[in-house]
Structures are given as C-alpha cells and as structure tokens.
Length: 289
Image (tube, rainbow, N blue to C red; front, side, top):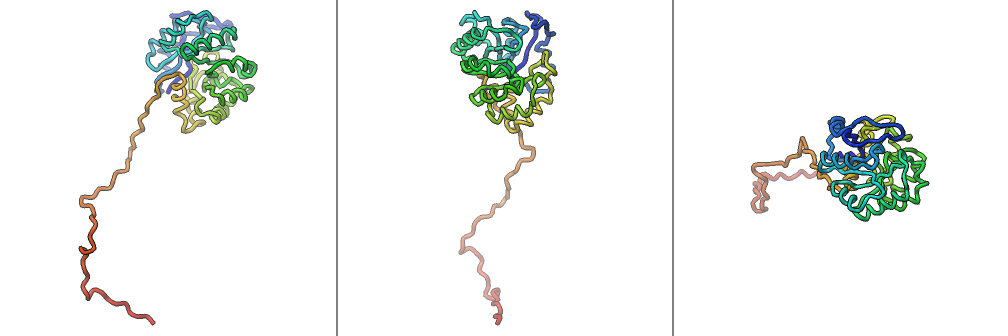
C-alpha cells in the first residue's frame, strides 16, 4: 500500500496554532505503530496548517522514512528556484494549497506553483470545501496538474469535481471522517469517470476530523473499486508522485494442475502393422426380411 496523505507532528520542530488549536505530537514511530498491520511501501507526508512554511520537519521526516516516501509542502512566496530544486532533490513533489484552514494569496501561490512545475514538475494539492471549487475555476484552470484532498469534502462541489476528474485531476480517498457526503457513492462516481483518479490515504492522525482513519476504510474502498483495488491503494499514487511502479508476484497456486505423465506413451501404428483377423473370426450378419 501507498499512503498518499499523512501528517507528521514532530515536537522537535516548530508548530503553530491554527484557529486557536495546536495538535499533540504524532511522530513517525506513532505512525508506524498505528499502521503496523498493513504493508506500507511508501507515502506522502503533507504539511499541515500547523507547520506553516517550515521545511525542517519535512526534511527530517523524509530522511528517516527513506526510499518510497515523498513530501507535499507549503513554501514562502519568495522561495528561490534553488530552494525548490533542493526540496525536489530530497523528495518533495508538490505544493499544497490549504484554502480551508489558512488564509492565502491565491495569485501569488498560483504563480509559484507554475514556476515550481516548470522547474521540477511539481503538482498542486488543494484542500478546499467542494462548495468553493466552482468559484476557484479561474485559478484551478491555470494549474497544469492537481489533486483534490478528502473527496472534495461535500456533495455541493461533486459535479465540478467530477468535471476536473474527467480532465485528469486526481482525488484523494482520504479523510472519510471529515466529509459530508455518502463516501461509497462518491468513490463509485469518481472511479466511474476515471479509474486512475483515486489515491488512498489515511489522513493520520486525523486532527480535527469527525473521526480518524479506520482500518475498515480500506475494506470500503476495496468493495467499491473491486479489481482496481491495487491501483487505488498504491499504483495511481506511485505514478502521480513519479515513483517506480511496484512489481507484484502472483501468489503461488496451492493446488496447481499438473501435466499427465505415462511411462510408456502411446505410439501411432502403421496400417500394415495392425493384426489381421482370422477368417473364422468374421461372422456374417443374418439377413432380416
């Protein structure tokens, strides 16, 4: 599995109150303990509003997590090209527009995103209530590659979200405890438009969500997408974050079909080698009148 959306709140690094709230610690060790029953092969560490534009925690987290892990961050608008290139070198792959929890200079962020995409191919991940998606169409239409967090949050924006999906946008199947919608139906509709759009994530630790991630959320996704579960749980996100595809070995057949074997195979006989019957062996049939 690839966890396309998680947060790390390491108390060694700066954190800032947002709307009067400051989360408790949630370290890499905490994350690994929580997800120990799953085979997690990588993920995306996403900067939250509590981390502002601090990059020190993200650099430390990516160094500790290692291969297969990437970052999504928020930058100061005056960040230089060299800073962006260096963050890309250590594994950062995108910018986050937190338009729900943080005030932002949309014009400045859009210009920065275009510059980062041209420099290193970064995309933009948008945290926004679906009701605002349509109003931001002039901004979103300028972004070459985007992902929308938490299924777009609400039913009101679903038609516009589906239009974005039809045009190539990705959607994170995350934060089921944050949204005001029928999750299964929303997953089904997004998947029907584009099977490559959905990307699973835990959104751990689930700060300020109605409920945090549950193991049963994975079961729900698998029930909805069926045979595309590997794509949603891993492959779509790995492609989006420009990571190598995972090669899976097919499980061994516990009861394989074996070829038939005979010690003395049957060989064809020539016609002249067939035994000839004796004359007495041939009995004429009686004539029935």
